[in-house]
Length: 173
Image (cartoon, one colour):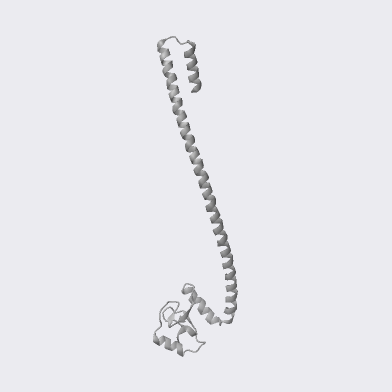
């Protein structure tokens, strides 16, 4: 556009155009080109300003992404450490369970496993202050009386949830 405006200006200045109508058209075209060039330069400036603003925003967001990624990395490291700790505890508890399970009679262990499967993973529950901790129901006086009379090595079960009741000194019996 600049080249065209320069070329038209040179034609106007050289006197090569003699017709008044052509001269007038040429002058209008030069003014129009100058206006259009000014408009385009304004658009270019606006685009450059928006680009600069966008680049600043990109830099800000990149910094925020870095900060968030740092927090994610930290949380991931803590999670992995917690998993390692839990895996260690699970291995330890599994070994303890195997030792204890070896000392439990086979028929009682079989009953426990069956109840555990039926009751969502809990086959035995503590009897605490006359309440089964498996179903959280208070046992009837007659049930408590029967449990008191039962021998210490007798397997007693909750009448409500059918779990094996573990009697302790805190049972209130």
